[in-house]
Picture 1 (tube, rainbow, N blue to C red):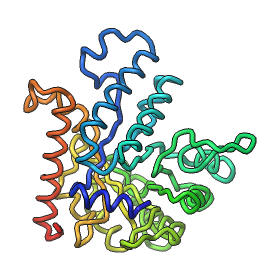
Picture 2 (picture 1 turned 90 degrees about the vertical axis):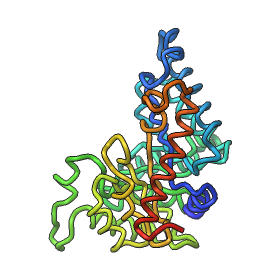
Picture 3 (picture 1 turned 180 degrees about the vertical axis):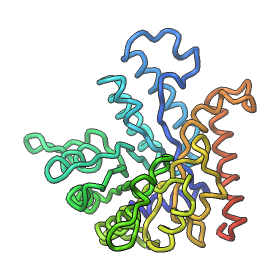
Length: 306
């Protein structure tokens, strides 16, 4: 699956994942005004997402859909989540279900079946929330990663495991040194590499990748240097303070090795003065193009543009 993502990045010339972290509050007023129930909200969110997918699917290789923004609308919200993933997949986009699932053994296997594998009912198999990649929390150790890895191998899917997250307080734990002298995040990166060693594709990257925040460039550079087979899902660009120049360290010398997520900066672009008068879809398209040029410029300055 990682090869397919890389080929999508190469064909679009754009290492951007649009984050469909769609809160009802992000919708234009005309889409919100007649909503009274969670079902109404979920339908409006679905309409918003599908319009963006239709507008952007030729400009970006992937979307990331954060489940928390759908869970809060209950069953109707989860239907919107499923419909968004399905529409993105149908349009040819790589789909990343951002759920950060973690557990061990059979429970982890159930989580994996929901997003990466299959659920069996009397011999019939179903994919409830099928995605190409799933974000996972591997801080329970290999017991919490291997069930997901098994489905990645079986169904040609991928994961992004939390390694160095973008939030300001991540260093309280992740930057702590362990007995072997390496930090916690370095040990986590090593574990992901070991678990995903059989998932390495033709470009040298594994389908077991790492979440590495754009807001911590020094740590990102450290992981890139020490673990060259790790492909990065990079949150933190834009609203969280990460810059294109700062995240350039996440990429290899060929300009590959990562995909940068941007959520509010794209889906809420229509609220910015610079896009005044544009529809939310038009503003999102222009924001994607500007982000592509911003990242390309940073990679060029770093000598990594190809």
